[in-house]
Each structure stands twice: as C-alpha cells, then as structure tokens.
Image 1 (cartoon, rainbow, N blue to C red):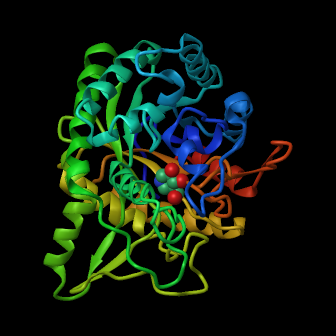
Image 2: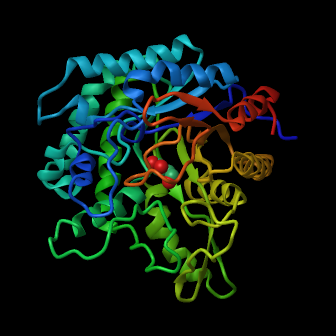
Length: 400
Ligand code: IFM
C-alpha cells in the first residue's frame, strides 16, 4: 500500500466542448458542419445546464475533485466582446463545486477556440498570444479561491489537431476526419508528429497565461501534456529521445516555472529504428484502437518527473474507451498500482482525475465511451456505472 500526499485529489475530468452542448461560436463547431466524417456534438451531454447534477454524482460517490473547463468561445464570442453572463455561469460552476465539497481543477483552454480566433490565423496568427493573454485576464477574477488552474489541455495533441483541421480546409482534401485521439482503423498512416512551430507558440501562450494568473490569482498554475509512454526497442534509444522531444518534452520543458504539471496517459507505444510502432492488432485493444496498457501511467509519471525535475504532478486524465465497465475497473485498478509504485519510488503526485466523468463527444465521434457515467443522448439522463462507485471506494481508502 502506498500512502498518498495529504489532500490527495480523487475525481474525474471533462472538457466543455465534449459535454456542454451547442458551443456555437467555436472553431470545432464550425468544422463539425463541413469536415467529412465528423459527427456533430449537438447538445452533447447538456452539461451546460446539468453541471450540478454531474458534480453531485461525483460528490455522492465519495470523490473530492472535479476538473472542468471554461469555454473561451462563450466568454468572448466576438473579439473584445465579453459575455458577463457566461462569466457568471462559470463562476456559478466553481461555487457549486465548493458547495459540494469538490476541489475544482479549472482548464482555460481544451482544444477549442473562438471561431474568430481561428479565422484570424489561430495559434500561428500574429496576435495569438495577446488574444489568449487577454482572455486569461478576463477570466482571472472568476477564479477566486480556485487552487488548481490548467492554462491549456494537451498542447501537443492540439498541435496535431490544428494541422489536421488545416488540411481539411483544402477542398481537395481526401478522406474522412479521424480524431488524433483515435487509432482504430487498423494499420494506418501514423499520426503526423505535433508541429514544433505551433508547439513553440503554445509554450509562449501558456507562459503568458501563467504570468497573468500568478499576478492576479492565488492558484497553482500548470498545463497538461498527453504522454505516449514510449518504450525503446533495443538500439532505438536515440530515436525514442528524438520522438519524445517533439511529442512531449518540448511541452514538459515549457512547464519550467509552473506549480504543477498534468499527466494524461492512456496507452504506451514501442519505438523502433523506423519510428513509432503502430499499436499491435489485438482483441484487447480499446475502442479507440490503442493497446490495453495500464502500465503506461507509471511510465508517463516517471518520464514527466524526470524531464520536469520533480515538479508536482496531477494525473489530470487516465482512462479507457470501452463498452465493458468491468474492463474499465480492471484497467484503472492496474493503472493505479503502477501509479502507486511510481509514488513509492519518489514521484510527487497530488491527485488522480479519471477521464472521464461522462460518456461524451470524442472529437468528431460518439462511439468511444470513456465515462464513469452513461448519458442518454435523447433525455440526458445520467446512469452511473459501477466504476464510479468503485473509484469512490478507492478514494475513501486513501491509499493505493
Ligand atoms: O477526450 C480526450 C480529451 O479531450 C483529451 N485527452 C484524451 C481524451 C481521450 O481521447
């Protein structure tokens, strides 16, 4: 049994576009209407209206934390036009979390941006960093009392998503959209690596946001990095290091000066002399086509601790896309064992937030279900799965 840091956070994570519904002024919403192969998010899980019910489920299960996001496209639907009503909405969410005894972990950017920002050139536009800084200045006052703020979710996956969305702007673009979070079309071209130029711009934006938050709030500030838990085949160690730089370490290095870093881990991949090996075809593969690798969490935590020089870590996402909740419990139990060993070996981990609270919109697709709670997409009825209560019991034990 591994003892945990005092005040260890146990909970689940979500993202606004994936659960709220009708994110009409965002760039992703616009793409849903025109990119072939993308399903629409529509009403999503209607969490925009049902967030109290969602938080209550977590609290009732015995969990003490909820990671959710603020949607920039709602706060600033047009450049410089700030919606006071939306600011008040997100403040109400924060206060609801406090009221229910949940520590909010608030994400300021989770893949989606206002459509106007994308049209202005997006993250590579001349004004990108200033625009993001202004948005963060706008939301800073509603973050009063919030202890954990994530400036940006998975900038490394965002860098891929931007590249893919751009490719689909070409009317001649062939093929159908497949979210970079999916790997389920069998052997397929490997994902493009995250674009380093976009990556550097995102580091700049993150650091500008951090300065604002350090000046104007008492929050601990960090960002979250998707970790691919690369493992080298014999002789491929240098290859692994090079790939790690582009995929993760550029972003982990961008954490220097932060108060924590978010680790997001799902699976692991081998690296050989030719590059990243595709996930082997196997009946145990998840609904997003990735290998069943709960050990990835331990690899991710150790790698993150090493690259960041021991920055406090929050597990901001870990989970499995499966229709079988028994497998979700098995995967999570094994992942937590690996996490426990990494903590016992010295990693400074402050919390575990499962992805995800709800079955939600997986960036163009509804089929992959990651949730501790099923959602009826017609009535929006929430149906908690056994894994929600299992996670609550694990939290109550207070040890891994
Ligand atoms: O759904 C995504 C989330 O938005 C970012 N991290 C990975 C999750 C599962 O693919």
